[in-house]
Length: 271
Image (cartoon, rainbow, N blue to C red; front, side):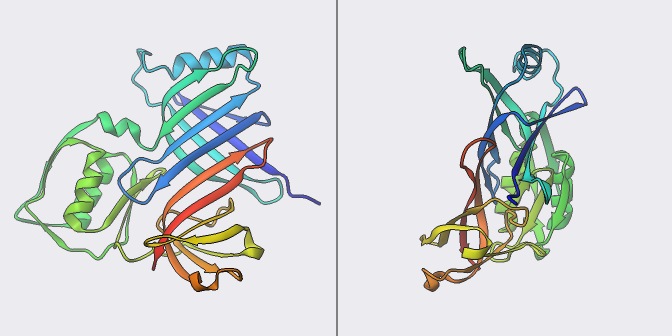
């Protein structure tokens, strides 16, 4: 018996979360293990006129309400359940010309924080973990600090709350990035703990992995075990020279409810 795929989209407006499933849905995007914002584009067919009008109105950049409008994307299988692959703030919504009437929504991770202006300063010396905690608070996300802690001299920042992530990465010489609702801070050459995806032909790999300047690029069936900044352990029979451990630096996803795509494309560097 085939384990059929599931795709579910959640749209949160004014603290009201509405889920959409069973429609014709396509989604693609890219997630980065660096200060770049994760991005996602979702197309939905089959919404009724009232729902389309409501979403277009509420997600319009010209709407008077300044409340954050959030988008959630969950995928999975009928038997094994759903897992979340993207959370972000809606930045635009457009409708296609009839007869298609496809609603296309674009979102970016933590985009609301890009408009919040903050100012912060530390003493002559301040622990990086303390600075990271303040940055997470300004960006309204949780903190997962796994880097080797160190003292940062003369920390000062004034600007967008989201830009602090870039500043933190440079000042601490670490990897700092926001994925969904968490700020991760880790050593550049270390994978996040407890995140391991063992990949082989039998566990979902599609095609043959390709070598890149720093590591490899590989495509595989989407799953709940792959995480940005986590470890990918490759076991390829056709390109065994690439076998070994890698750190996932970028994850592209492409999923569709009624078409072929249901893949991750991971760009990794040697661990």
